[in-house]
Length: 334
Image 1 (cartoon, rainbow, N blue to C red):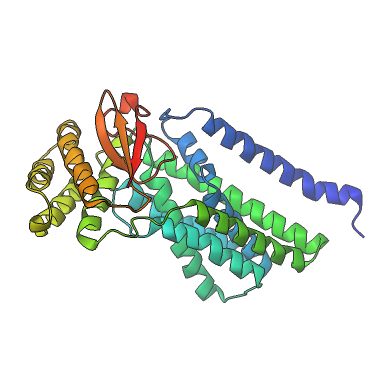
Image 2: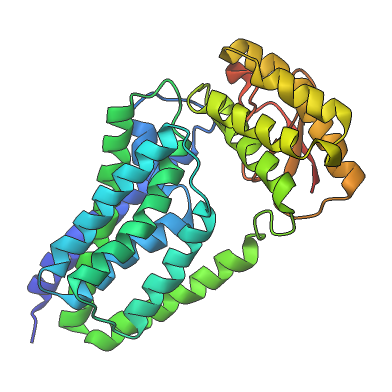
């Protein structure tokens, strides 16, 4: 039988880790809109959503459940692949189905734990690596331009590793004290929470036809970059947007075609922001005229800046003026 003193020696570090994570999370949420450069935004971002926290703890739980080399190989693979995804996000390179991949990671990792699936490392590593790229991309895409890429990446890598460590410690403790049944039950708990996330998350651009989706996707990437006061990836996405509009010019109104072409000619962040305003108005007018309804595209209006579209309604991210990053109100959902 395990003595109380020995049990306390196991639990005390876990409580300390949990307290640090909680305090860090609260600290990050207590200062919305402050683009603190470098390390701290990176530390905070993995705690910014329950989907990230669940997936990263699940990686640790699954690794502990598999045992052997997996205890270190699975989390290390996740961290390495996540760093690659972060670079893609910070570089403004479009990666499709990121949100779907993040949500899928919660469900599939929960299933692996719930049914005690033990795959060879040769299969486990690519699976968690694929999920990690999606999570890393989400972290990198929201990096403020003022943040050092190296220190920002170091922050979210450290946070991710700490969440993996929590999962490993939880998995080891549950197996030692309560048996593997409790670990499997935690997998079902992760699945249940994943269902709540799914029910709260509208399907992203599910009803958009391909010509319009090819316009909306780069547009949203552009506004996300500009909202972070970043010009990374903007010219490439502007060219992709203009190409998509030009290729289907007969299906789009003339003013949208004209505004997309003018937008693609912008050469710096200032002229891009200026050209974004008429483009946004044309695109919003087109969505209204077409009665587009996806439940995942939001019009935001700032009385001092203008209107634009966002891909989520969690927080206003003004692409026109970094000094007024939270100026705006959600007006309607498409």
